[in-house]
Image (cartoon, rainbow, N blue to C red; front, top):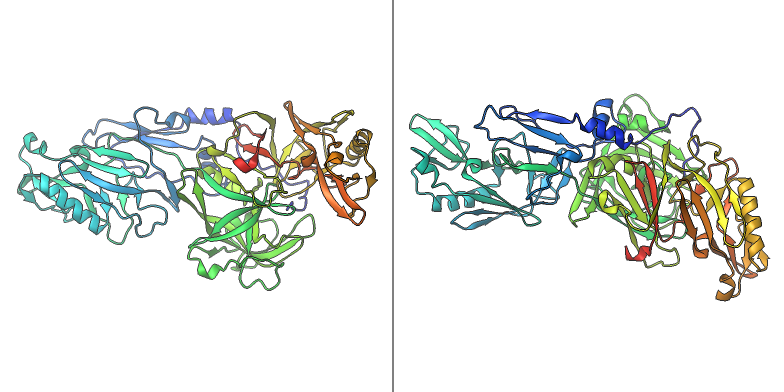
Length: 611
């Protein structure tokens, strides 16, 4: 769904700056890290359009790392590094990470004590949905569930032949009296094994900490009971480890519908699966919600916000509500909206925040919290009965792209649209570096205007005929002449361009002309079999940057049915006073990538059913 055009007075909203700006910031993006001044690193979350302080940070490539010097070395320092220079490239182990609220969540599988047995760790923990422990640079000791801690204390006690002592603070459950370095040599190394075969072998210096009592010097196992709280992998265990925080990719299933494509969204807690229209020309995420008595007919169940523990209605005073263009607000009231699309479809509802769950490229769940999400009480228009909502992937602040890309390892997303004729096939929408289109591709510059991703179409070439030159500007656009939209079926071109294109196609197609039963497409032909279809030409759309897309007849002509027999029509219509659009019919079997670091759109011809 493409929203109605906004006023010409609106300002452009670029998602990011050029890579040169990233590099300039990166050169100064190193912080001095001192052992006596713990630094709590917060995840990079929230809409891309945040106050300047956060936005400047988000222009850095999306990972960071730190290396904690031993706490005992009070004169030493190290660095927190944001961006490309933060990559850990030597001998390393890697474990999947998810983001839940403020926390970076890992999955700890077992703890192994040298010379003793291993301690299995339950896969779930209080307060977490996608793992069982968080990594915290601002917490000193490790915190483990009572059962795990009890077994760990038992295994360590089996191999340490030192007199036991009591922690003066009463926090650490296992301490030993030591009289010198020979006693310290009796302490074991302990391995924390995380998911992905990521085994971190910790020396006694990073697993035991000194305590002083009236009875003399003692060392204590640096682990405490997490109780009903979240387990934590703390900073004592991270000494002399170079750890990089690099969020995972997010993946969602994509299926064809009659005129659009639907992606799977898992909304709320517990996750409720819906199929939502995926639209790069749209800016919002919404679903029809219970009771929704005035919604369009929908075959799937409605989303019930009362059954989700993470659903929160937003007030009118919230920043996210302020970012919604068509809202109706009163003092202290919830953020209600009315929105009308270009085709006359409209929605009414309440803006809220919700959790969205995706799969990561590694197969583990990835939860994005506090995502702006519309809960419709009314909806009408040309929506498919299979569609239970909308997943806007446009450039505005409330789109899915703007809200989640900065939490991933690269500001990039891609999709591959299977042929609409293959109703059993599916493909993927991929957010992050796993979706980079890297083979046999062409690339064209992209700009962002309001919600839209804008390209520059230079000419259209019909095989066996002449080329059609496209004017460099178009109504409603300032930086290009056409937008790309995955939720609009046809291509829309200006009157003059369309007229010449129809003329050129007519020159090379020797088939009887017909009339589009719907009166939308200006050029149709009667076909009686496959031999007639072979007479239809390939048509090339040439974008700026020498990005030529040679579209087969199946991607530029579409079937229509009339009482006169089978008809195929050129899948192009008149944009009139509206925006020219490169629609989804032409994007079938194209792997399309949106790179916000360049910025550019990349195309590669492929069999999307095999992605």
